[in-house]
Image (cartoon, rainbow, N blue to C red; front, side, top):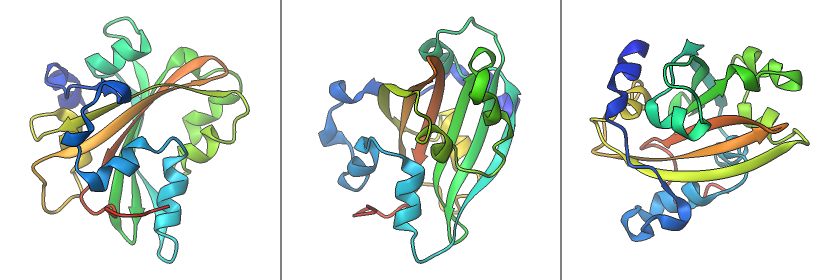
Length: 193
């Protein structure tokens, strides 16, 4: 399945920076989630407060990034990256699918521990790091023809017509890390803070 994602990379959503997106097209229940600049993991944990929250590791290993991921990270085409795919789960229901793409050159110094996260939240590590800087954030609508849609809905029983997601380029000690966050149908549509 993972190679299938890499092969289908030509069919990708149209990612736009926040400032260039027509917000009227985004369903209002997702807008607040997409625009939040804090730790999404922390926010999901707060929204799931009286229930059981966990990070479910789906995959972690060395793969080729999607074409647009490689472009954002300014990687040579065909290069391998550490890709980690997880779900943020509340009471056994996935609310967010997250795909982190880390170039090998970014796994130096204190960032080496990102290779061993397992089911620990990435947000807890990133947002506690004193040398974290946020780069661009892009938003996109994903349809069933996109490989990220397929990966995100593996554990979703009723597949929606579309999903909304964002991806943020972070710099940890000056080295890039790309975090894709795809919001699944069961995430609370109002509130969550």
